[in-house]
Length: 199
Image: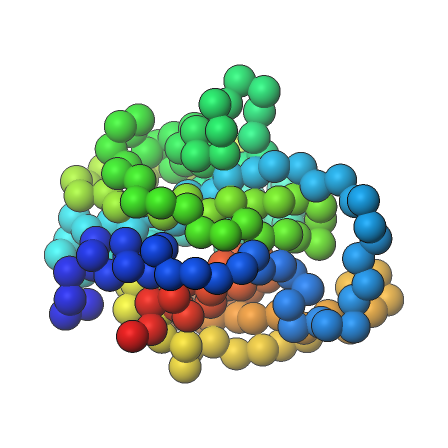
C-alpha cells in the first residue's frame, strides 16, 4: 500500500456501515425472529513487520467437526471469562497461532457479522508491528499463512459462487489466493473491509 496502512485502516473503520451476514447474497432467506446468536470475536491481524502489510489467516484442521479445512481468522466464541469479544479474539489468536499477548495493537472493530451457524461475530482489526513465530495449534489449526492486504482490499479479486446447503442454493463470496480458497464468512468480512477501504 502506498499510503500509511494504519491510517488507511483507521479511516476504513471510522466509515459508517451496517452489519453483514452470510445471507447478504441470498435476499430470499427468511430468518426466524427471536433467534439466539452466540457471541464470538475474530482477529483480523495485519502484520507490518515485512514492510508489506499482510493479513494472517488460518486453515482449520481437517479433523474438526465444524468447518474442517476452511480458511478462517484466528478467533472463536466468547467465553464467560473473556472481558468482551476483543479479549476473546486476542485469547484465541494466542492459542491458535501463538500470537504473543500484547503484540497486537487493536485499531477498532468492524460491524457484527451473522453466520449461518448461529454466531454473531465481531471482527477486531489489529496491526502487528513486530514479527513473531507462527505456531499453529495442532488440534485446531492445520496451517497459518498470510495474504497481502492489497490483494484482499481489491474488490476485483472477489467472485461469487454458490452451492446447496440444507437443500437450498446459497450464494457466497470467494477471494482465492494461490492455493487457498477463502470463502464464506471470512471472505464476506474481508469483502466488507475492502468496501470500506475504497476511496
